[in-house]
Amino acid sequence: MRILIILLLLNSLPVLADPQIKLSMAQIYNLGVKLDKLEAIKSAPLLGAPAKVVIPPQNEYFVSTTQAGLITQIRASIGDEVKKGQVLAAINSPGLLALQQHHLKSINDLLLAKADYARDKKLYDEGVIADRRWLQTKTNYQVFLSHLNETRQLLTISGVSQADIKALEKTRQLSSQLKILAPISGVVLDRMVTTGERAEALAPLFRVANFDRLWLDISIPQQRIEHVRVGDKVLIPDTKVTAHIFLLGKHVDEKNQTVLARAEVDVAKETIRPGQSVAVKIIQNSAATMFKVPNSALAQHKGLTYLFIRTEAGFTAKPIHVVGRESRQTIITGDLKKGSEIAIRGAVALKANFLGLGDDE
Image (cartoon, rainbow, N blue to C red):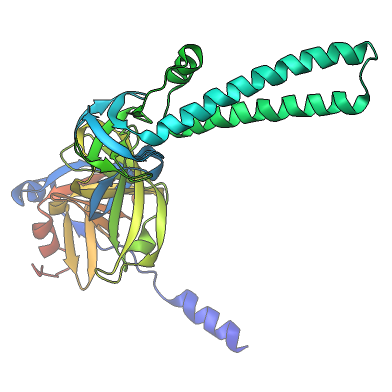
């Protein structure tokens, strides 16, 4: 019975409608009100933040050598664009001579083992030699073949090109000059050695990076990270650079209380440079329809923001929710229809007529 009484009381309460402002065309003209159509949008600026242009780690290489030696020549410097396989430097390495001698010995051993293999195979097929001897000959041949492949691989790991290995096998001439080659096509970002310096084995000599892919490491205030989503668009104002967020960090930086958001650059990579600090704007798509209106179209009263919609009798003061702001425009949502006529100038005057609210701003 009590529930029935409460429902009857609720149904008897008047429904609060949006306040109406009755104005004639002459009054609208005298108030200096300007009208325009309501513009619907699907994305809006979420926030601005600082960012740094970085290179993905898979596109950055440290160039070194497995053989210690004396740097005899430098052929690339910081900022140079290089091609994959291009010579960056030359090293005089005594250790390279020992590797080459080892490789040539493995070639000679294999030639002897191959001759024994061919001879014993014929004898075995004729039934002259025992199975044990034929098995031993085959095993020796496989061992020396593996040994040759091993020494060839050691030369490759040391930085000797396939062309130089073939030349060594053909001419049998040893050389202590080791060429340091670029592992990728890209730009030399750093050079750690000079001519005449001794380079130790595995010590970094150059840093080379490919700029085909670039990231933006964005620092988002930790209290705003919950509003950022993977897939959000990122812009660098006053440029054509666009990117999209593909990673959101899981921890807060202790120094500045920000969370990492990482975006991959899609367009205009050539207009920014690794290491550059930039200001970015994050743009977010929304399933709900949003609208963009001039700042002058809005009025505030008692903590609410209103937009004035044109009606036959004058205007309706429609409460709206502010999503984001730009320099001269505001992004809003609410019970609005695309194409409705709104007052984009004279909102203060309309507010003065808004049910006697006066000109409280």
